[in-house]
Image 1 (tube, rainbow, N blue to C red):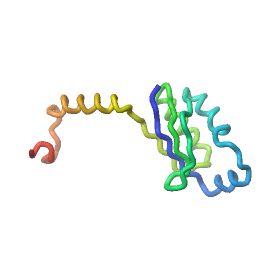
Image 2: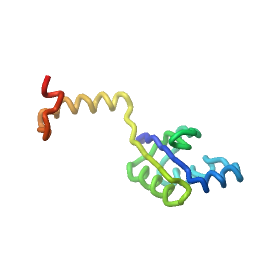
Image 3: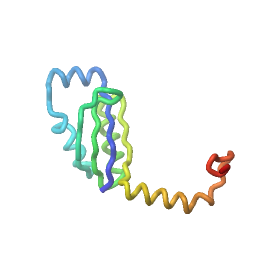
Length: 116
């Protein structure tokens, strides 16, 4: 399963209903996550640019996209960002692959890395 960072900003109308009802956000979204082949690992309220942030595991990228689309289509959010996450080992592997492949790409500008 791949992990994704979820960042959600609610509409003012959604906040008004949540303040009024005080329902558990996990009860509301877990059935949708489950139906998209996912699992919530952690979820937090974060009163900044985003109101809710979390980490979720999805079995496929399509499942993560389906969750994001369905949640956004509900009308309660004004912004929803889904970011695929790499483990440290995956990041190191990606860097090694980039190093091996870099000579195959000819950028349309003088790259600072090539000037050295």
